[in-house]
Length: 268
Image (cartoon, rainbow, N blue to C red):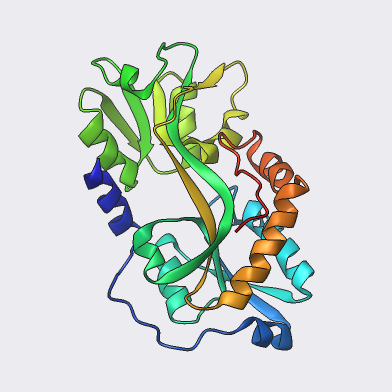
């Protein structure tokens, strides 16, 4: 099990030898400048993507906009690919990193985290055409799993589900389409990000296998030692969680609730 975790970290471009190139902007400086630089993944629907008018939209965009409004500043959106999320913080190119930044101990050696914004659940998405109550039930001859080229989960599947066949495509939409068309039986991935695409296929009875494989917590990343900014963001996130706003924005963008909601707690 440790192998796929290490591979996932490597795939995200994490470098433990990185060192700060510049002093991070403090909360006071952000407020004085009137702008907060938020890193977003430019190719991650429905988290953040450009619409037909070239404007940013998605879950991260809505939440980031709310946070900026509550701080009383404007947002500068900085396209930040998956592998750039930690380096951009370390080098002071952004003040906050979004883009489903999963908490782990390796990243925490380089950056600080807020309280969780959302979860992501490694699980099985299938239809009612195939039986199975846990992910292990799908590890058998005759089962084909759909996935995307380059995903770290491909390696996880090869290590932990050696009996299945893999059919690889290039996007989340294509992955869901394979299962909807019966060319694959299921998807083993961070299923929350796939739910919004299931509605494109009428007449397909989708189901998420109840037993998750792994639940990860995604937070906002902030430069190490920027304690005041983290403290204020934590308070704002608590307000957004306790009011039900995060839940509503997630369902609006993904068409379904989070598979595992973030527990709301005033203690952080």
